[in-house]
Image (cartoon, rainbow, N blue to C red; front, side, top):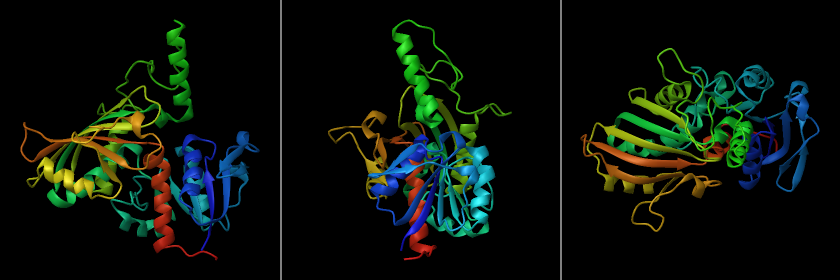
Length: 340
């Protein structure tokens, strides 16, 4: 069985990763189409050893397309994802636009693959926020055993979460910093180089940033509505890889030793503990990796039934492109039929 796949936003960071991962995982494609805005038409993007010419999203006919992997920005997805879905394609959308739509499943395959069945309502499946994905992958096996009451998470998020312009701005600011040149700010609210910024996305009426709100509502939708979440999201001068320090309170007793064993057996999780040679992981060590890496699992002496852990993942892969393709793989196994 083979499928016609369209990648929307093919010239962006996540689009590049989607094309690369499709090839790496030998996804069964009959045809792959690279789509982007008019200004990118004619550019070439790589799909394995093949170079694909970018086509104009605005003019593309989605009829006959089986799966659309979409990461062009929320406003563009809002316009084109429904068009692709109406033409018969199943859209896996990486933007924020559809995540909280009650008729659109929000899916992390290691956590709630059964939710994919709900895609028939709109032919759209939402990919969660990158910081939410890695956290719920680590939380799910623990929740199954001891039932989570509350999560307090502080994130340290890389600039690639703001796309290629964010990466370019950090590089440019770092270069200018060393030659004592003035630093320009276009993507981030304040200087990003050699700094940390306690704001990701816009501020909401209650004072939390929208990225923090996303982690709260998305965790509830994916994992369990009863879980209380407090998120503090910070942008740090790292190019690729999001890190999180997570404090988890459980209804039932669970020790650090038990949690390590559970996580070592969990799909998509790699435990690196103090007994190992690495002791713990940092974003610089896991760029390009697919797993969610968990370290420093320990008990919180200040609160009963509470654990702390450090969680790191490549936000362009598991936090975006890989998760979308894993959803597509679930679709092909259990829901989709295609021509041989």
